[in-house]
Length: 88
Length: 394
Image 1 (cartoon, chains in turn green, yellow):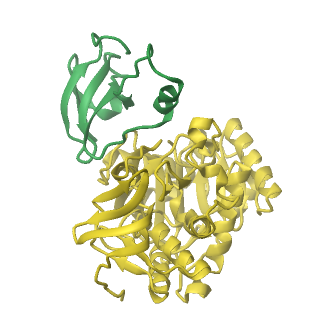
Image 2 (cartoon, each protein chain N blue to C red; image 1 turned 135 degrees about the vertical axis):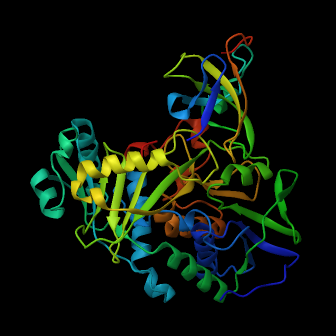
Image 3 (cartoon, each protein chain N blue to C red; image 1 turned 60 degrees about the vertical axis):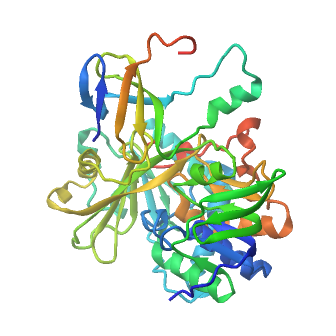
């Protein structure tokens, strides 16, 4: 069980959260059809640290941007997605 | 004991990953097509990855015609493998029973039964009374929450010793002249003008016109070395084994609703598998919540196991594709081939994947049996929906 820090609620067990996706945002205005297709299925799936979207489903319901290492599961940063310009 | 080799300067084909898929491919390239200038690179020891971490279950009762045909061929190859490789693989065709505990899952199971029959695979939907005959220890009420309504009965399903398959393929491939380089990680893939030209290893550079990615659990990482991105998300799948108890279970028992599957080994231990972890990770650490969920599900089916102790638990690292079907064949980089995206069903597919990919390499075009599994199906929207054919919750 990993502990996920939420900027609003403090740390909670990962079971209170839902992993959403990699935090790579597609620019809906200028993307081509091929870019849309790729963004639907293809993922960086990195072996190491990455930015991810998680929703605090059993908490404040906010979507967070986590910086998490997928090899060690260590979470080094957590912030609210709200306020990021464009996309989400 | 495997031979050790000096690294040559060049090979016709480099296989990345010395697991059951990479070794099967090497074996079929050499045996079926006479290609022997082949090197298999394994970063650890052979079979150290998912080949030794799966629950060793065989079955071919999938959901699509493409899937059933593919896994049926694999089972056929597995049946004669021990004889062919002269290596005891302890094949136990104990049968595979998937419980239907709600109307939706019964509908899916009936669909799979009919699809399997159409492909000539022995599989039928049976009622609860028949389930009780096959598994007398079962609580048909499912603890009141998940009543057993019927099940998909697949007599050819069963188990086969996974490490024996690894060693058998490795020994046979080696005897045919294939070089297996253990403790040799592929750290780079060289390309020139859109073509593969070789690989980098800590022991030096090797030139090769063909490089095949057979690195289950590291598929995205290896593909990225060649500049290829994949529709894969990597997630751990945990499993566990109990202490030995008196023989009481003579089939593989799987539950759609409870996302659990288990069987009893000849030694009496119970081998369990369950859901994939709920977020992507390359960590193979086990978790307590997995054991809690597993125990809850198992006890709803077989209450008498309440006092049985778990001996150990572990995780395999699964490369999940969007449609639950694998990715086999070419990429945009000429000479860089894929045998990846094996999700939770890689072990049972190894012989057919190796045989088909070997044919693709030798003949220059993919055999019909793997054509549906090409990488370009994602952009073209030709998915092969197998996600509903697994007892593993995704």
